[in-house]
Length: 184
Image (cartoon, rainbow, N blue to C red):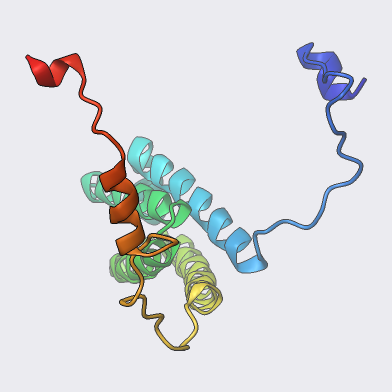
């Protein structure tokens, strides 16, 4: 009995197949990076949404809590989109959000801000995350793009294995069964 079975009390039936060893994941490195960035985005967005004062205080940007909350909601939306089937759009929305974040944080580099060091570190971090976002977005687009091969043309197919005429012939030989609902 496996460790999980002992904890959960769920046991496999004797005839069930057993997993001897697992194979490689169908998720490539780019998909794993996109997933990690999606969850990071949701976590960061939640922090921005629920603790904006901590962020503004650390950057010397008090009074901008509403803007930080708005950015948090945007970040969560980008994260959810990144985790969806539209991960390409989610990653590019993260890149756009990173640009907006950097423009906003640069405004806190004013000489009168005693927390300029924190602002500089934040900008470096944003730059690093932006590079990851761009790499992931480009790699995801490349990995999931369709080949430039010929477009398949099915205009000559009916969907009936023996042809439309044969399907009509078979249908005309069968009596139509009506239900009581149609007789009413």
